[in-house]
Structures are given as C-alpha cells and as structure tokens.
Length: 127
Length: 127
Image (cartoon, rainbow over all chains, first blue to last red; front, top):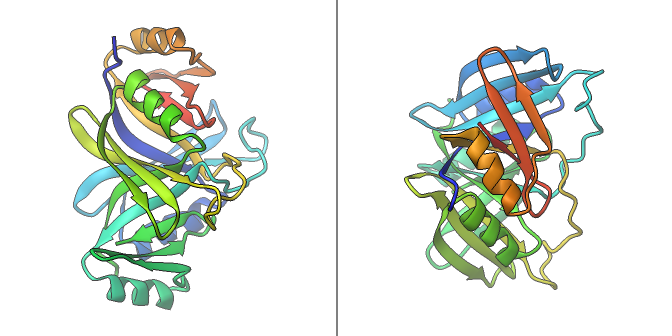
C-alpha cells in the first residue's frame, strides 16, 4: 500500500532569522503567516507564503544550546527554490538594487531563468 | 517596490535519480509530472507532486562532467520537507516496512510529528 502523503511545505534552515525574514519578505515579497518559538528544540520557526497564497516556506533557526544548532553548511541537499515572476528583467534589477546580484542566467529555446542567492547562500531561481 | 514573485517549487539535488524517484513515488506516493534531460547543465530533472496535486518537488541530478556535478553534502540549507499524512502511525509503519525507519518523533500539546530520511539523507517530516 502506498502512503497517502501531501507535500505541504519546505523548511530551510537559516543562521539569522531576521536577515532571512527581510530577504523573503522585502526582496521576494512574501508574507509572514506565523512566527513561533519551540521550547522542545530551542528553535524558532517562521512560516511564509507568497502574497497570493500558495506553498509555505518555513524558516528554521536553532538557538545556541539546541541539539540542532550544528555548524551550518548550506550543502547540496537543497538545489534551489523556484519563484515565478512576471517580469524577469525587472525582478533581477530589483534584487540587484537590494544587493542580491544575479549569479547565473540560463537561456534555452523556450525559457529563460536566473539565480540569486539568499542570505545563507541558498539558490533562488527566478523564472 | 517589492517584487511580485510566487513560490512555486522546491528543487532538491539527488545523487541517484532512480533511487529518489522510487522513494518519493513508492514510499511517499507522489506522481511524476515530467522527466527531462538538460543539455546545458548536463543534468536531469524530475518533477513530482502529490497525487491530489499541490506543490512541486523537483529532483535534480547532474551527470559526471557537468560543472554542477560537485561533491554532495546534504548540508543544512534544507532543514526538512513537510508531508501531511492522514494517519501518522500507519505512515511510519509503511515507511519502516520499506526500510525507512523513524529517526525522531516530537510530541507537543497540540501536535505530533516524526521524521524519516530520504535516500540522500534529506529529512522528511510526516505530520
């Protein structure tokens, strides 16, 4: 029997909650759904979604002393987070003006997309 | 001006496409939306979503010789992927029978959730 499971959110780990909240809300225009401290893990989570709803991005931070407060390597597990934009050039310009420059741009026959890095070095695809 | 961007998918990187496809389709019951080879990056992507639709998980693999085929460390960038299940005990039992044992279980006043690891060591939250 196959499990009935619904993919509902993606949790990334961040080293500085406020810096990441600023990036995802001010640069990518997401809104905060909730912000919670968790005693059990000595952690803090912030739920975010795009303005028109959709999928949830959860920021996870573990305070010093938490068993999960391990050294941070961004790693390859998360390849990138994909954000659809109406106007790629305008979006890249806005990101650039906030200090997030384009690190890679790819053009294929039918598509064009580009990447910026979030404050933790996580790749953000804009397409 | 704040960018109008919509969070549309999460791309994880996998070391063995077929192993990961098997895990996400056979253990977590997702369906394949598409599978593409990309000449430009010498990569392969597989789009997946839960049976009833919803958010897209993209598996990314880079063949040997691709500039993106770097050494794989799962890292902390991706904290976990969240999957909602109807019956947590049944889901954990099914995962266990497929060889994916529970690595952490957390109970709070109002909730209970648990984690298994995907073939690359990415934490999967079931709740």
